[in-house]
Image (cartoon, rainbow, N blue to C red; front, side):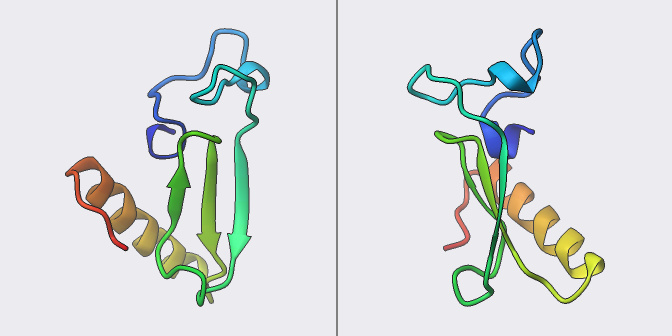
Length: 79
């Protein structure tokens, strides 16, 4: 959740009132992208959006997502 929204918790009134960095309500969004667009999942915390590349299988998605989250948590960017 923190990887995508920049916050570690859901608002008390639920995802329906999740705000972006501008204070406006921004729904949590999963956006499928081609592998040509990006190889690893990419988050846009200002918009509460995650771009997920369209991997061949679930195992690859899990592996790449773990790497992306770990890199973000340590202060490194994958791009």
